[in-house]
Image (cartoon, rainbow over all chains, first blue to last red; front, side):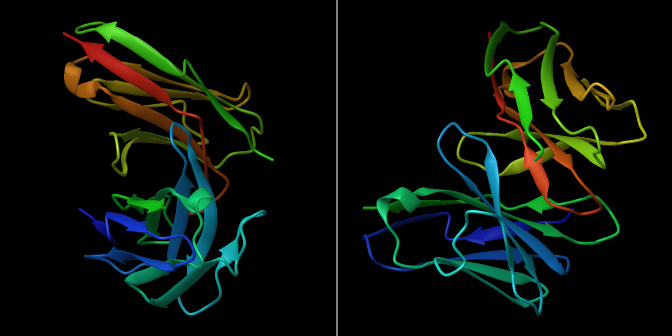
Length: 116
Length: 112
């Protein structure tokens, strides 16, 4: 089956630093990947849609300069949280779409970010 | 703006019971609806996908129904097992491979 990985699985950083999270589709290519954020005991909220070779599309209220997304290849999208603050602490999950004509998204295992 | 709500927020049942999880959405113009399972601190596992033209889907002990006109879906779990303990999320899609709007989740615990 289609597998999506995320790295790292957990990261703790100091306030003001930047953190990069990788999302990889291991056995398929994905022109579209999605980035979600999940606060404790809340549901997933879409942050942005990442398209290979073009700029990401951000949801309303998500700062594009703070959450930098790069989808440089068909198997890798990265999310960089710049100048992280404690309120950015969250669970970040990506998903990848193997075939845009279908409805299937495969989700990564998530990355737990803690900003001290 | 689509809003998705799940009731109840949490549920505890003894092993062997049949149970129903509810999902409602405000905009009936959906493309599909999916049910996912999420274990603590983990990603999502897709359980069932119902297209807007379908009424239900079944997989093993799971059955999901969709009533698009009333904006509701249910997930029926038969003969629950402790291994079913997880958070169940429903999500509606607005188009092919489009972004999903997730519900608030139901945290299920099946006790021995």
